Image (cartoon, rainbow, N blue to C red; front, side):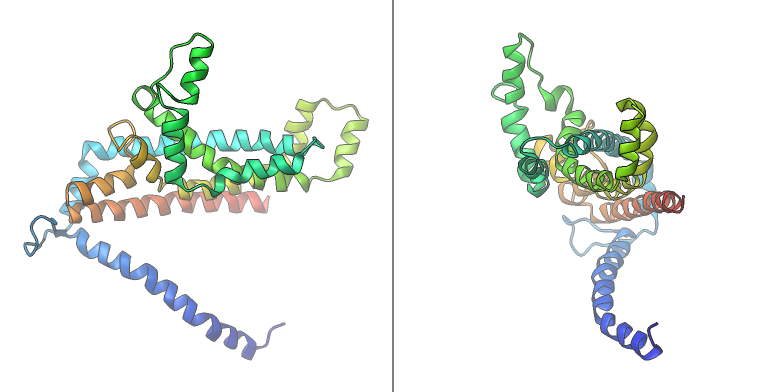
Length: 288
């Protein structure tokens, strides 16, 4: 066991890093809280005035807020469904002794290293373009009318782009969990002649349930902050504006720093509420 002196030395060694991290977080948060109670417009420098919680009231009662909140939830839910289901299927495939499995694994994780802005541009101009995109070419090849994704189904298009980026993460986590499945269970199921579907639902799925929970927790925290894909593809709009993009538009398009700061605080509170419940959920899952 560590002695009292060792524990004290460890705290002293870690202390500077914790202090820097604390300052790194608390200074921007403090400034955001300060600006959120001011009537502060970038076009009127020097005319700032204290207005209390009016910025919060305006932000929370703005009809655009509820639309942005709905878009945020749809985006997070859609991406989670695609990545969890797709990641499970890919993990099951990569767990099989197929030819070129190492190369396939490398290709699967490749999208995770592409910057969000770059991937959004690739999907917008090379895949989803209604005239020259790959999807349009495939639709014409089978006699169908190409879809103008960012006009007819913009939020679905963004869900696909973001899911493509996060699918490797889900696949790797689930594949790691899948490979830890007891070989004796697999052999016993094979000897009993258990069909593939019951084997998956009664043996594999309970085993990877914790990994699925981890994927949902981590992805949700990051998906609440999706911005680049929306900015590059649709530039906002009622159908795709989420809360982070709404805060951006209020700050840098409408120059309302006070209202945007209030929106940022609301976004942080909502993200922490979601994270709190997800952490409790994963905690119960791990204790089970």
